Amino acid sequence: MSFEALGLSEELLRAVADSGYTTPSPIQQQAIPSVLMGRDIVGVAQTGTGKTASFVLPMIDILAGSRSRARMPRSLILEPTRELAQQVSENFDKYGKYHKLSMALLIGGVSMGDQLAALEKGVDVLIATPGRLMDLFGRGKIMLNQCSLLVIDEADRMLDMGFIPDIEEICTKLPTPRQTLLFSATMPAPIKKLADRFMTDPKTIEVARPASTNASIAQFVVETTSRGKREALRKLLRDDEVRNAIVFCNRKKDVRELADVLKKAGFSAGQIHGDMEQGDRIRELDRFKSGEILILVASDVAARGLDVPGVSHVVNYDVPHHAEDYVHRIGRTGRAGRTGIAYTLMTPDEDENLREVEKLIGHKVPRHGAVAAAPEEVAEVAEVLAVPTDAVADPEALQEERAPRADGEAPRKRRRRGGKGRSGGERAEQAVEAAAPVAEAPAPRSEPREERPAPPRREREPERGRTSDRGRESDRGRGRREDGDDRRGRRDDGDGPSFVGFGEEGIPSFLLAKATVVI
Image (cartoon, rainbow, N blue to C red; front, side, top):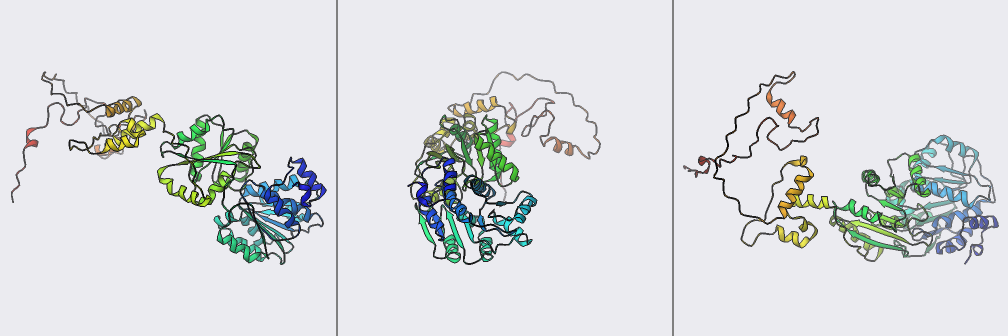
């Protein structure tokens, strides 16, 4: 089927052809004729299948026949995030370039001045996030009684973000009857209830099972450890097949840190999350679209509906807390008929989250294989666990190493000395010692010990503001030294010889005598 068979106007078909599209997607084939007929629609389809064009194209033709009035928009599109609202406005500019339709974008994070000026002139299409729309409505700057067409996009995301009460209130301020279109990739029960309440005999269009993933996306799970996660990510991103990628984190704090880590590792990386100013978010997204940066580290603010053509890979640095987010995250690749690859890094404590994802999508995600941690990380883990480095990479060897020994002795343990101030050479020596077999202790030396003169005692001058030597010792013990040397855990301060325990003279005999208890 071609776009000509859908009943669109000549001007609209020309704009679609200019955009390079020739064949409508399944959701577009079924939704566009019904929207043109004035039906209420509930559209459920996978991400990246063209849901936005399913309502933008017919809306342009519907609105082309009349004019708007000041502060009284003729249609309303609700989006959960600023980025999605911005993207839909770009679609209207692209497909409506041969129509004389006015549009206003109401989103937070930017000045209200330009938005109010656009509303005063009158707009045919109002694209808004619920928060900014409710704010302007409460100030009396906008009236919705002439809005005869409502679109609720990414409805399940609206539910997750807590916008459902706002949407219910907005719907009560719209005229009835009206045409309502609801689109989403998943359809949980609260959204179905919303549709039943505010829609009239809606036609349900379901081109794929709700929450199913795009078949053109190859999915893999990479099993790793918490310490080895960053190295696993770096290894994946260094693959020659990775042209560009979006890396998703669960927390905004991790987005910032991971973006800095990737930049230091030589990757062309940027970031986008909810704590950034709107202008900065748009600039980072534009840099990624233009190819100025190749890796975009993002929170779930970028997981819904963002259309960036040609994203070759998506990496879930964290398994999402909500299984539905997995479907939307990996949908940033494999769009518009292209293929894509999605990796999910999973640590043992994220196994439950992954099981929820697999339950939702209805199949098990194949394992790509564990990615080992960096050598220095392996050595550090081995030191903490007091086992050879080989045992860290081999779970069976680790279990055997830490199990009780056959002769009845407890498993070997090593005391960690030197704290954070140990050098790389000291760590390497201790790792070698840990891997070496335990040898018998050497016999005490019989040669006489050389007598060393005691160092002369130095008189300490009292410092101003100090009441006791204890204060000076406690201040020095905090490890704040100008030369950066952290001496925490060391008894000497470089003023004389250092002694460990009782030195070479052995334990005094009175400490070895058995105690006599008198009752």
